[in-house]
Image 1: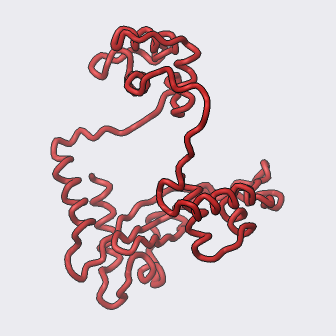
Image 2: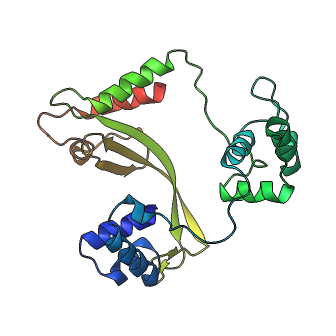
Image 3: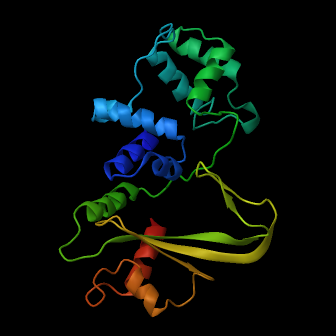
Length: 249
């Protein structure tokens, strides 16, 4: 859907088929197909797949949703989770689904549904769960600030990401379909940090790469990061306080 929407936007700007295919990263035939579809139906429905022939789905939608819900949970729940070696298997999911819905699926069907949804319950993912009891009201204040900022204010969301500075030994190449291929071998040049600020009113992102996050910003940084009005805008110190506030949340 995202790729098709990009094709529609670029075509509306008057770009040619070959140029769109390079920018989006698909074949020119695919671009022509979706341009023709959107000419016939210039709505959101034109971006969706057409109904296809063949045997209708045999697994009800509610059963598929229940299987996905089970796969996203630990076998024994959050209070007394099972050890990582006992996380869901396809057979265990099929048994739990039958106990909950009285609907029996084969192991292969469970695997097909999970692959279609991009789920791999045998892999462990890491997430952060906030233990602050006041997290909800704090998050609400931030969201309200994004949605309805004070008059004349510049509201930005600031974050930092460490990056490895890698130098490719050989030149990076770009294929005709727009894909990029990096040489496997590289030289390490230390680490740097990417500072980024997202202007919630305009959608513009200001970025700067620095050697260390403790480096003092240059005058260009102070002008660049979120300051649409250089004379009346907030100072860099204000951005630092805002960044620290987001870090505490």
